[in-house]
Each structure stands twice: as structure tokens, then as C-alpha cells.
Length: 181
Image (cartoon, rainbow, N blue to C red; front, side, top):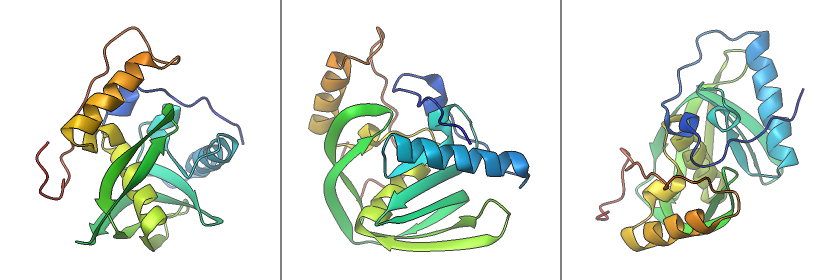
């Protein structure tokens, strides 16, 4: 197990669609352990493989004292919504209110290839949606309304960790709950 460096906003791997996991082997189990240790060390509520430079559909989470992971997730989202603060380990020290589904049923696999279903609401639902977005090259600032997104991009440009290039926004292909972006 090894704590890995977390990729920061602007790194191209964060904008790529991650590849499905096809082989459930020792390397995958090592990746899950590295993700878990890195997430706990940060500390964070979740961490997706692209955030440590690995373009595979895997994420870990640590919510309500429960630590877990999901490989090749697919999500069913509730119609009920929640709006609340969200941050990201790839955008250190920045938090903005983001609208998400209130509940989620996530299906995928564990590190051994066994089917897994995770049902959650509130923070767990937010975390699962956030990490699955990372697997699709989406960062939570992409989901913000126009004014919040402008504020987020300004904060990113002013952040000590920001690079020299202008921040790029990718509009989410997922439901925005009828809000105009």
C-alpha cells in the first residue's frame, strides 16, 4: 500500500473518461488499497482512480464511518434533490453548493469481481455521484449554476495551487435537474 499524489484541477487525466475494469486481479486490489490509503490520508470522503492518475472506473469512499469501494459503477438516482456544500481533493480548500440527487442506488463490483449494490442518501449519495462523475471526466464545478461556476473558476485562478493556464469547464452530460446552465 502506498499513498499516492492527488492530481490537481488542470491535469488532463481528470477530464478523461475512465476505462472499465476488465481484470479483477492483484493489481486492482493494490489500486483499491492505494486509493483507500490516499483518501484517508488526505483526508477525504471519496477518491476516484483518475485523481491518482489511473484512468480506470474505480473509486473509494469513507462516509459515516464506512469505508468501501466500487468498480465499474452504474447509478440510479432519485428524483428528490439536495443542495449543499461540496468540495474535491483535486480542488484543495474550495467548497461550493452543488445540486445532486438526494438518493442513489449504485451497482458495480468489488475488487474481486463480486456484484455489489450500495444504497445511500444525503452525504453518501453525494459522494457516490461525485466520484462517479470523476470517472466520466466531470468535476463538480461543471455541475454548478452559471453564477456559482464563475465564482468557482475565479477562486481556482486565485488559488495557490493553480497552474498558469485558464481553468477549463466541461458541461456535465448527466442530468442537471432541469436547471439552465
